[in-house]
Image 1 (spheres, rainbow over the protein chains, first blue to last red):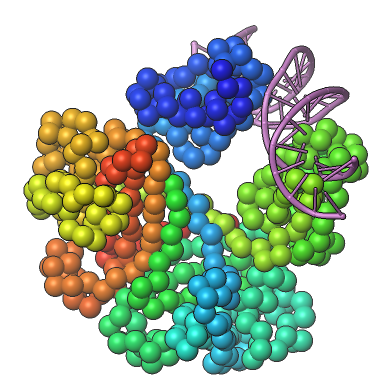
Image 2: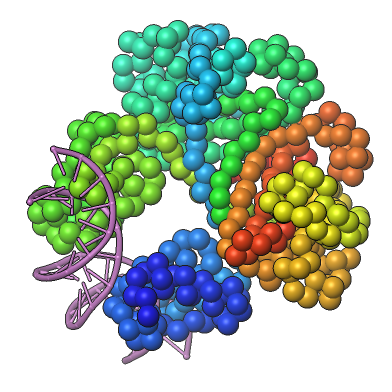
Length: 229
Length: 229
DNA sequence: AAGTGGTCTAGACCACGCG
DNA sequence: GCGTGGTCTAGACCACTTA
């Protein structure tokens, strides 16, 4: 009898795999299981919570623990820091500021940031390189009212991506992934044909309800984001 | 004094946000914090583990808990069940089997599945619709030696995606996301222009080391996968 | 060698939500 | 109401890793 929470998770997982407990079924209560496994209830709790996090179980007070009817897999991705990702592949990371200006946010941007009034934002475009190859095109809007020390940063040297991730915290964020066809500008900057399929990552963050920044990262063909299940 | 682990997580999170503890810093030990917060060490442990899971802290025995030097955000995505996703938008889900055959796996597929010998696999192509609009193109290879009851399934009625997710468990899996330019076949099947950018999702699973299935899902332009941070 | 996080225990109280 | 999971406690032992 393995009384570790990992051992119990493994055994419960096996019963789910083997169909001893089927989707929709109510499984025994924590008390019953802690009795069966001859361990403390807290240990069973740890194991079942872990499985519930993965989406395999659904737990409700009083109602008990059920095997998820439709096991919607959940996958955890690490969102890359561009510099770290490039250097991890053994390439040299390089960064080039393309554009920096203060502008009123266009409508789609203020919508994305949930801005009420069309505030004056800092707009930055930059290219990230892996060796001499363009690796990622960054298009970012920053709310200067929320980000301290913004005017002190030399964005021709420090990537906005890195500065913000390292220094500016947030309390909420949204992330979405998609694909987008390259336009003429993308093609030229990323040095690829104009019809290429780009991988697109959008991220927006807020600090206590105030918009901080929103960014679109575009990656040339071949880029993938991977994880294990 | 809030002695809940959520309250403690919030307070520690605040100290990270406010820079009281900076990237790379060693923060007080669990014992010290449980003393400060006047609670049990287990409660502090729960809070710190939660922050470590999110990538904000790095914990090592004896070395203590450090603020992550480069806070690599981790994001959890729910991997959609196609039917559920379509129906959640209020559309009618429809499924069309395009092709079903037994073939030796081509090299790229056996590599993806980590097959040693070129086994005979079941190859399936199918289209998933949202209303009358093509929603997703599925290209799947199944290992019949591992999947029970495969010959009993009528894949003209039941989507392989759904059958496998509901009935066939796995112990390991890989998932990768990317973008791909549509070719002539994709364009015709998905009813889109030939240069469109497709969102590509690859998933492969194994059961106790044996390859179960590998699938490529292609989504037409406009599809996004989203989550909150 | 010693300090730190990882985990387990036995017990307790509570909040939720089904009947 | 009352059974269930959610959480907290005080204490203990252990595993890992650094000094």
